[in-house]
Image (cartoon, rainbow, N blue to C red; front, side, top):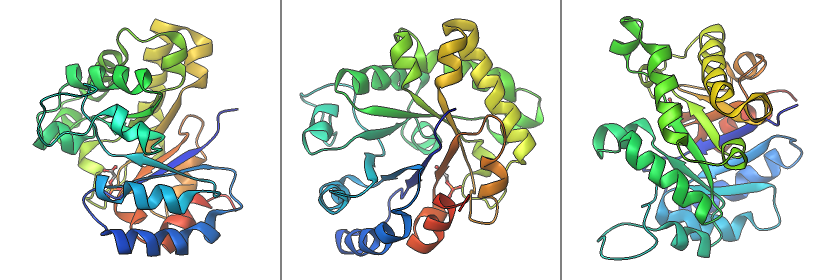
Length: 250
Ligand code: PGA
């Protein structure tokens, strides 16, 4: 039985004082959950959140990183730097990074490898655009993105990669994929992993759904056969709302 993993993605929101107040409000609301709870926060909040998460069941993640460990890359943050301050997870290849910051399947793959090399757990985002969906290309696109992101990893590494299936047309739009659609796309991703890495790896990989997840649709989405939790943007900005998503089964 795979564990449910629910991650908040604050994107470019929350000043440190807001982040600390959030953590204090959120922690008591989710302390009973069996779900793995992660908050992926801006770089400038990481240290405050890590300090505030100590002794709680909340894990802290970054939203991006460079693939090199150090060097002349002005403005970038390395996996080693994240690890050194206690970060556990890192989102890689979010569609906003692919769209606005020229992230490609190749950089995604390099970052996934760099995450493992530095003992960080990657949350790798894949998903189709509206145009790709409407022209019937969804499955081909997400299978290809998955394959390229995981290329060259060991079975163990694939097994420990979290994948977030996020149809781009559902992100921040209020339009959620139906639970049947999301589940069938996630099955296709799992099947692609099965083809390359075999059954036992495929059955262990956590695959989340993301795209307008809220407390009113979380239970339906997360009760399907293959959706192992969610990556939540807008609805993770309010501690009460996000706690309801985490406690969807309570
Ligand atoms: P959303 O974002 O929940 O606001 O749609 C999800 C994401 O981008 O990870």
